[in-house]
Image (cartoon, rainbow, N blue to C red; front, side):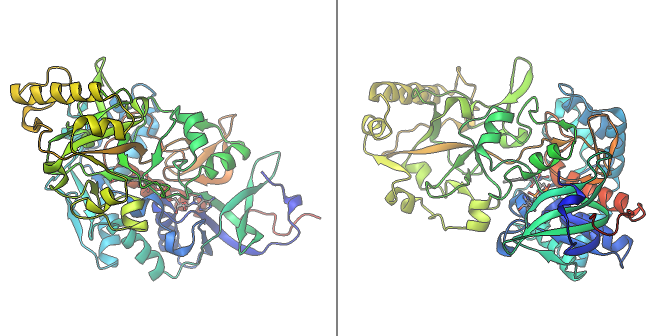
Length: 507
Ligand SMILES: Cc1cc2nc3c(=O)[nH]c(=O)nc-3n(C[C@H](O)[C@H](O)[C@H](O)COP(=O)(O)OP(=O)(O)OC[C@H]3O[C@@H](n4cnc5c(N)ncnc54)[C@H](O)[C@@H]3O)c2cc1C
């Protein structure tokens, strides 16, 4: 933290400083404005304007809608069993969840966009991740705001712009200005136009600056994940963890029992920092994944996108071992190559923001060398540095399972057992990729941040994925809604405070 001694002059004075212009930051700004239209607000965002929006902008845009508070609580309690959260928190969260839909609908209507029941890109009305834990009663439906992609983000952005709330882009939060004894927050240091600016926030600072997906070192240190690449914004580099730790906050959920958002099969262009998602809707099944030894290692054609890439092992849901099997390759034949783009284009930073065109028949990616092509399996193995005899044997085993209609080793659904037989043959590297991280400062649903003594740090608020209350398994549509709930809660809690008394910098 920085103390008041670091300030000689305030560059800006506001009531509430909102840090981060993603889902939680935008929701906080809208709520604060609507609750008190004259409130002095400033939103600061690390990314340049064209790259703002965080993971929200490139997410699947699914929002969980529940109509049954008790069932939702029960489901979340069971999903969090390995790392429990308090009943009080569950109750408060579930209460806000069952009351959230009208606000989302209003945001959509005010932006002139359509609120939709469903995911918007599949026929599904609801994504039920863990029915055996109570998903069916807890989830009324999945919802989104059209268009796909980015509809939810577009609606939030339109609402912020409509209210003419000031935003500084290219302006990362660097540090909080606090009383070193009481930890009370008076404002923040922000970098803007190459200069450090001292921002006075008389009622509070809301830190909503996302996770640490784009910090490979934090991935290793906190999640124990090597080699994983983000699917979302490259600007979420874990600044919030450093700032919250420095501010004296108690941390939680840095390493959940599983990677809540899951470790997904990504495909990364070598020159990009983030991955595309492999197309889980590809209408072709003459393919499988192999690990670093050239062997299959999981039920790759299972609908794992419905459980955020968790599979049931030892009677519990655990992450698929994509990171442990690394380097992983997808092996496929001409039928799969011609079935459509290998990557999904409705979400991810690579597809939505960087948006380099992926060729319809994957031919350009073969020409670029990302996808390796060979006439025989043995030649293909050599191109990707594997033992030809092993890969030939694995293809033969897989094709025999297809012929028998029974994958007795990995249990692939017989409907998805199509042989890799129609040459030429292909291999593409699969990059273990993640949608999010949840760790951060321990907080409540109003975004109050707790210090090591269990007391609230005065005037410090946190919202969104940074410090998420999700501690293990994850139900689709919970992160965006949690970001909305905590952003709005933090805004109201900050507004409820009288301005802090130190109005002039210390000598
Ligand atoms: C591919 C993908 C699919 C997903 N699908 C879904 C889904 O369908 N449903 C769902 O509920 N969730 C989904 N998620 C997760 C969801 O997008 C995030 O959890 C959610 O956006 C979190 O909101 P947030 O405001 O906390 O963070 P973000 O939306 O990531 O916003 C954080 C903002 O803070 C900015 N920032 C970072 N550091 C600083 C700093 N130092 N100072 C100022 N600003 C800073 C970032 O640039 C960013 O704009 C998905 C995520 C991904 C990547």
